[in-house]
Image (cartoon, rainbow, N blue to C red; front, side, top):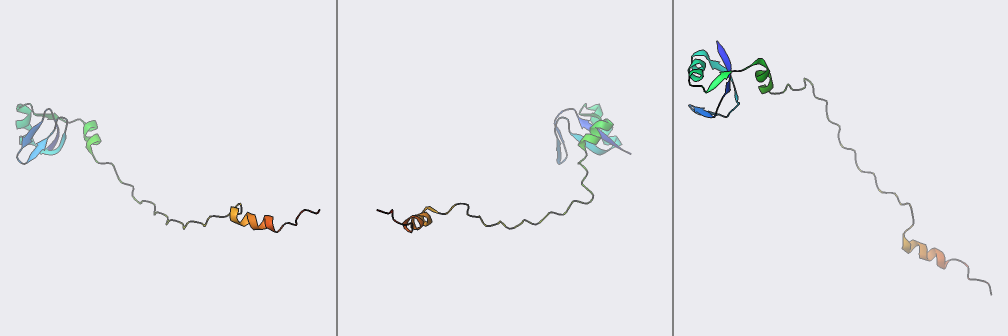
Length: 95
């Protein structure tokens, strides 16, 4: 049967390296016993194992909406160049 362990200090084991506090899941019983005897690991609690598990993904993510095209800008005031001809068309003052 396998056990879950927490590293009590930084160590390497074969090609794997473990940091302080790392949760090691599925360790063989004989290997776990050897590392406990060397004071490298202790048995992990259920809360530590739950915290180490990756978060569950959404079963069906919502499809994304396509972007809408931009609307053209609307003019709210006439440009200054357009305002000048309108003033020139006004009737001259009566004398």
